[in-house]
Length: 215
Image 1: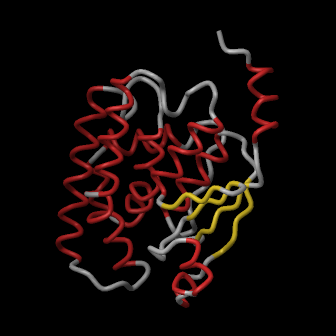
Image 2 (image 1 turned 90 degrees about the vertical axis):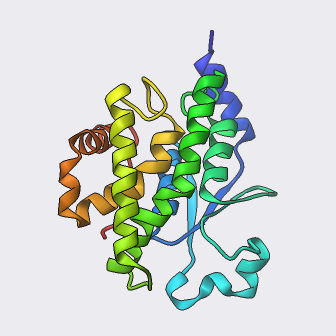
């Protein structure tokens, strides 16, 4: 049985000063801030202006040689990549193991959705939003095709279970939510996926939900 009082005291004891290097319009940053909010963690944000190339500065590249945001600093520990950060926060600050449960079957499902988040999510919604909103170069038709593929995969899964990795929300839902929700705002044809829209709406009702970037 989990002793929540003891667990909370333990968290206070181990919690360092958390800093997140991020860009406000980044969905990858948003997913990290969402988990932090849902875990009720205090986290300092440090803006890295990728539009002006600040992520290529010597100081930031020293922090993350890949020159990408987000980056989490927890004391002497530096974690790069949004999925790695989600995993770290869940392991370090979620003693109840709500977001990354202990059973292997659920962990496997979360990892499967992490792979889709790094694949179809990036080649679809992330790329499409980048082209339409941020003025990035790219093949809009291909990005739209990949977006529809991802929404189809999401819809199929949500026909089988209320959340992506099972009966309760997990890191899988956090990893996929931000960019899926952002592109659903932009593309009217995605209203043809009611299960996905319902999942997004239910996610937004979870305790600690953090509002999306403005665009």
